[in-house]
Image (cartoon, rainbow, N blue to C red; front, side, top):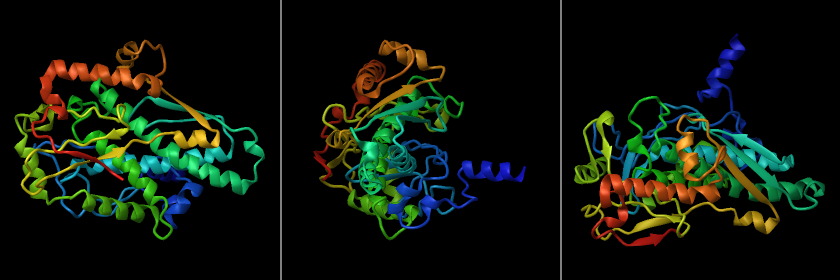
Length: 369
């Protein structure tokens, strides 16, 4: 009975038992693996409504397992607009977990594995094809190559998975069972925040001095400073400035989100953020775009993977019909068609206001190096 209770607490993300991956240098976490999937966190709206928590330059510590010292909410940055720090942390921890899981399966020469987000019912299936002679390579050589491949797979799988969650939400899925989530589907800061989490984790997992949680805290603070993070008052004022145009409503249950950002890098391989025009504290602001994860490195080493998503939500048939599938979604093939379908729906529902491209005087975009 006691053992079951402890297991439940750990799996819930409370961290009652030690997790080898979060102790010791972060660069060892991939080898050690995580004892459980990341804990559940729920994002928030970038809107100036009752209940939206705004943060300033102090983001607190990061915690793969629960910690009262972690701060979550919306920040405003000059180069990235609003950023949902909760989404950053969600994507970061899933990237760490899936990078470690990929390494484990590569070292075992497994042909496939699967996983699912705790908040979704869909299951993600990954099939791996190996180069000839992989299993006969010396362990040290396989480990070095597997680590490189895992660092490509982890961010790719995570960004694909969290993007699928946004798609599900657009088509009516409610992970908490309340009619408040459609407004959050591809809200103007979501995909960029998710992508940022995957990028920061790759940096954190190369830290040879600090444990994973502290390493992620360091790179998050560094990147937010580079992006021009602003005080709480600026973030709230920026949201207030677009009220009535980008969204309407005062409470979560009654928000109508018009502004969406469907950019997941399908056109140019980058995700570009949505900036609020004419923020006084950010004169001449330039939006910094980040590259989406890709699998080009796998080809160099003779690997390939196939990812499929098997939805089990009530809304699955609405999505499967769009791509003329019966059971599973192939993100590489099907996501472009689904994203186009959503864009057309948004345009019909909200008109040109849904798209960041229609902002007059939209700041110049530059790509992150």
